[in-house]
Structure formats: C-alpha cells, structure tokens
Image 1 (cartoon, rainbow, N blue to C red):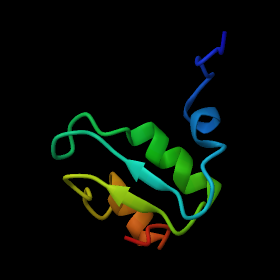
Image 2 (image 1 turned 90 degrees about the vertical axis):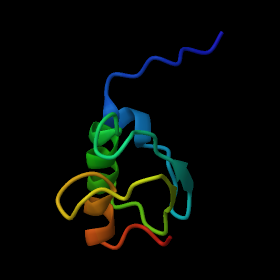
Image 3 (image 1 turned 180 degrees about the horizontal axis):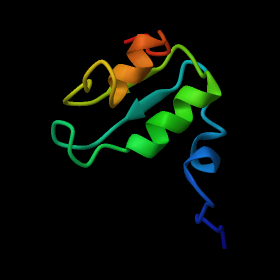
Image 4 (image 1 turned 30 degrees about the horizontal axis):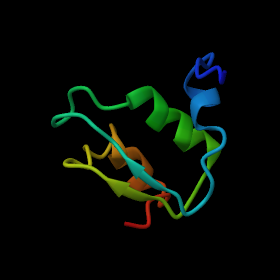
Length: 73
C-alpha cells in the first residue's frame, strides 16, 4: 500500500520537475491551493504549464509564479 499522506505543502510539491503541467482548482481566488503555490515558488521550478480558470492577481495565487517567470503558459 502506498502512503499518500505528506507532512506539508513543501513535501507535496518537491518532486514536481521543470516543464511540468499542473491543474490548479479553485473559483476565482477561493479554494486555490495557495500553500502549494507558495511551496512551488520556493522550489524555483520553472517552465510550468498551468491549467486553471484564473491566474490569480499580482501578489496571490498563480500570479506569484507569473511574477517570477516560473510559468511558461
């Protein structure tokens, strides 16, 4: 059996490689995986393709990853 429980957002995103494709849920800015986005920001992973109905704003959500140019499209 595989244990799918992780200790936090940093552990959840640690294996996401450069050029990965991610689907990020939420409705507007509600329900987005904000802690995972912050953890991705810290990893420095780049070339991400993000599938989402909202890219957030400059200082929140996917907007943070756009600001650091970690999102390719």
